[in-house]
Image (cartoon, rainbow, N blue to C red):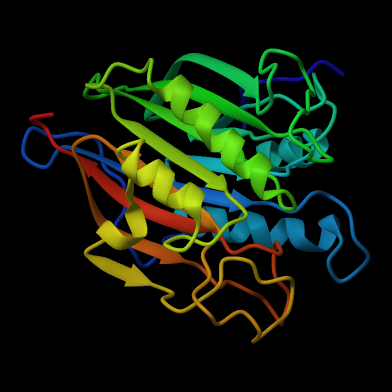
Length: 292
């Protein structure tokens, strides 16, 4: 089956108790709700098998109603399932082994608000245009998905970069961030950038985090937020109820540009002790200044 990168997805009327996204206005700027979520690949035995987790994932996404979701680990059929479960979304992605093969760094977006103007992918290696390439000691290919969006009401444009860094090799993480920063150097400074991902390194404690903030000019939505939900939670839960309190954030939403952040959240959603993924989604509600 040929991948449908811009596949339409099903309507969600549930509300989440947090600021909702609105179209741009002259007074309050462009409001965006951004989620980053490692979906956990479709596998595992019950009670963590994908068919058991899928309705929980659908329920939580429907409640939050994000404008954009940077996802990690999703397999093609998993992403197609979310397409069938959610209304008003499309997704852009490519398997890290090419085509529909392997895990995706897929980006979901609400079609009523956002129009993709361009998208691209590259691999985190010495040969970034070579599909599935690995050169820094990691056992699995890692990659980046980039989408340039236009918000339909305001015409404002911004970039969404989404990635998943290696979980085993620190050198691979550091080289990956250096490559990401090298490529970001070509982005016009006036174009806002949002970077989502599972970085497999703790925020505020790791060299790659410092590098992205200091060299890349990024800010952390979690620290910039006026209000935070889920403080003290690890973003990786490992499907272990009650064993994820330590504040170790390995999933981040970073930004650069004239954004403010009204709220950030780590959502420890579960149903009857069952989690939709072994990671909690992180969410940020951003406002791009009308004067930017």
